[in-house]
Image 1 (spheres, protein in one colour):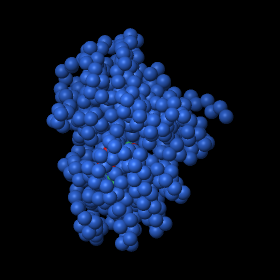
Image 2 (image 1 turned 90 degrees about the vertical axis):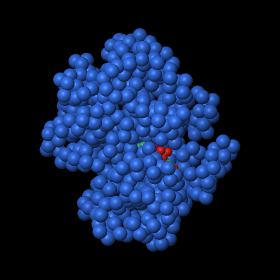
Image 3 (image 1 turned 120 degrees about the vertical axis):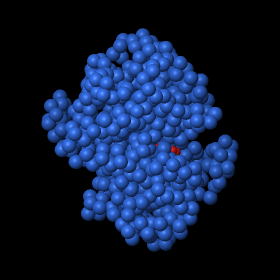
Image 4 (image 1 turned 135 degrees about the horizontal axis):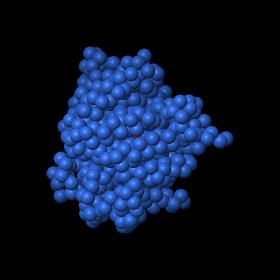
Length: 548
Ligand code: NAD
């Protein structure tokens, strides 16, 4: 099978009995077209799959093509199980991916069940087909850099150096986010193919093959205070300590290697790709030990940079957790990005909201951009982001856009776009979705909910309530995922998708789903004691009961 096999469908010809089914089918095609290893159904994050295996994939496709509007397809860890008669306001698909029972929720048990073909990991947006390429996390990363600029660098990253690693499905957004934030960003990546992919997609500007070459590029860009992104071929566990040894202290340090997976993700220092492949097959336990050892060096270097004055943060890949398990007792001195930079936004349910042009017509996204620029003209962060995004962010797969907007604004956009579909202003329907890393949708005590004000970090009721609420609110697809970084036992999250097909029913589905999703997000943070969430609930007339 070759990569050419994975393309997206364009235009308005339906292969299914309605746009809700067709839209979801196109989203499945889309995550494979932009995925990291589509031959193996892998979308991103080492093992985040779009379906359990090819027979499951093919059965999902053929079922979507024949399903009626009043039926619901049940998908368990990427395998379609059956279709039941429901009603036209029920989801077309309900999914549960990688949910394991507490005591058994360990990486080793996940690998065992995965090998037996009983389970698959859906990542956050891979298994439920909401991934939109590297754009999906770019604004989050950009917002973090901007927040750091405001807090620590007098609001400007001009001439500042960001050091990071990992240019995979998600990490590939880092070079463009750093450049948009005005910085010089060095991304260490062990796999040259990943560097080439990001160069081709326009997310990365330059490649360096040695540290000397990279340092010369960095010096030239800093001198001119020019924003610039460089991908350096190398292993972060070796390069970070080498940079430290040269006495260079970057202004910001983070990492987005797939450190959550010690076998199929992180590549230990000093081991060739061929050897890693062999170890994956024959000695996974030994490979886990090697990866842990490398992560210890990697994180010790990050901690040392922190001591020397760099702003260091964990960008959601569990690298601190792995280092801590391997004996780095102060690994958690490195803060998590959510608590450090984004929580005030989440408390107001402002998060990574997205829309995707199902017709594959980029003009549709540009028209929606225009609508946003006009409607949110008073919101500087929306105007700034949409202006940057339309200028610099290349589309991958189906044209899509992300914007961090919150309660009421999401509903307003959803309904306006549905009207634009109905009136023929757009050339086809649009799918609305969001990252799972969103206000009420995720419990992850080492990423999303670390150090919650009321100590509710590990309580997974919220994403479960979120998914049930989305079903009651007429979403077209509702998914409950677990696993997360480390695969088992680290998080529970929920994903939703609604198709704006221009119909009046879609007005209802969008209105209820988008409004209730952010309502729950605000209530979750209000319940945890965040003042911003209390204010938002009062301002937006959300019926939060506030029981103590
Ligand atoms: P990916 O598997 O697609 O890419 C990881 C990249 O890291 C690969 O290109 C790999 O070659 C590289 N790599 C591995 N070990 C390395 C090493 N020692 N040195 C240099 N490069 C190395 O994963 P992804 O989708 O980019 O996700 C990366 C991590 O970010 C995952 O742990 C994921 O769970 C996490 N994540 C965080 C967020 C967030 O919101 N912050 C969102 C999604 C994913």
